[in-house]
Length: 82
Image (cartoon, rainbow, N blue to C red; front, side, top):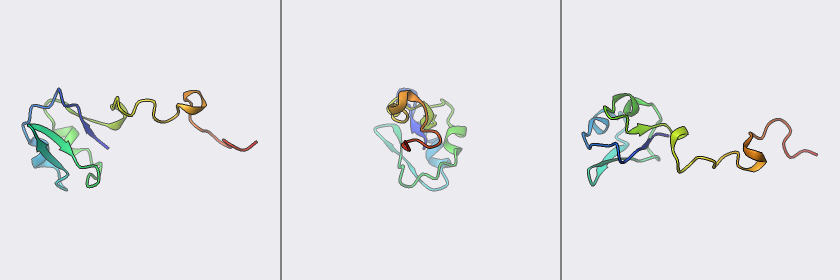
């Protein structure tokens, strides 16, 4: 799911106009993505002139959320079977 790097968003509303499912709105001059509507098509990321809309892989709020158990590695085959 894309997210908005707020400090980069200039409120141009290009993403709002380009979103095919109307998942993006503006709040206090910043784009906000409704994750329950977003289809992850990526059009907003392509069209943003400031690169303010980023993929979840770059979201600092999600860094380390997966894989923290098991030393940061993926679960792999047979995890949990001893």
